[in-house]
Picture 1 (tube, one colour):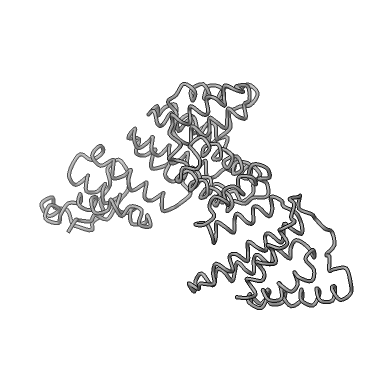
Picture 2 (cartoon, rainbow, N blue to C red):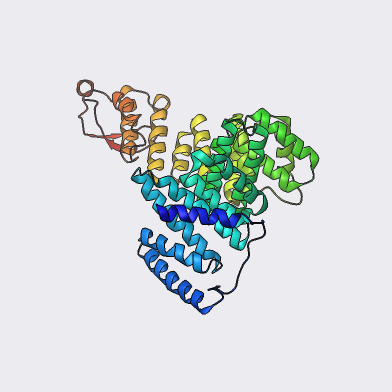
Length: 436
């Protein structure tokens, strides 16, 4: 414990004369200025590095502290390792519910102070410090993490990761819930984070991770993202620069994603995006327009646009799959049972394929069956697919089983349970089952 307290005191002493500057990058390690210092630096550096490799964080911390005292300007990685070592110890103390946990957390802050004192302040350090706070000390320092992340994402977003986007979202949410920022600020930062996600997705960088974190951000911003509020903000942005087609497409996409598709602003954007003479609508543009049509139950126009989106989507499997899900829903609502059955077969997940096929077959029973036996056959056919749906049809199976004829009714019809039966409309042959 004494070792930890000493480390904190040392950092505070250094910070007394600290003036902010840009982080200093050095091309060669700085082992010190005289032979004794260099020798001690190398010796302790070797020891702490070896203990770090062995994950012996307690001994690594001891020799890390000595290394820092002999060669504080060795290189920035010294401090990255130091924060890592003490964070690992703090995490262990947390699991043990040890009263020493806070001392090690404070030591991590002290190392960040040393880092800045020796190499200057910069967004890289701010980002790492903010991430540390959110992972281990958020309840006490949400506001500091928020402040650090706001500077990083506003000025140097390229250095951030999808984890930083998620951490910053939590910090923003806390600031909003505690009344420290309002909805306008929340939405301003939402736009900033969405832009970071969009840029990484467009550049092919951890695409699935950024898509997932974008969905998380969308969910968390929902208290502020009413359609009226979004339209108010985006109308101002659009009117300030209506010729900026990149901005127009971004706003169009945001409103589409939030299903805010009834306003005059959305319809204006829709017309501009789909009729831009310089840039034909992208697959995403067509998909967004189609989802708006679907919401308004304009199924004919939606179907046409979903099909166009699929044709132009290239290798965007996620958009193609979502388009097929909507097309299945359209076929279902229009009672185009066989068409919906075929569309279901184009989905990525075989469990979804079987679940949707089971559902649309069962939905056809009241339309295509002219007798109780025919109806029972249709439900029996639906159950065949439900059995292969990996549990996704489990909520419907009891109801469908209840639609099967009992054995007594089959006897009256002179039909044997387990016999082959042709399914009307579908043309399949099934082994007839009963409800009992």
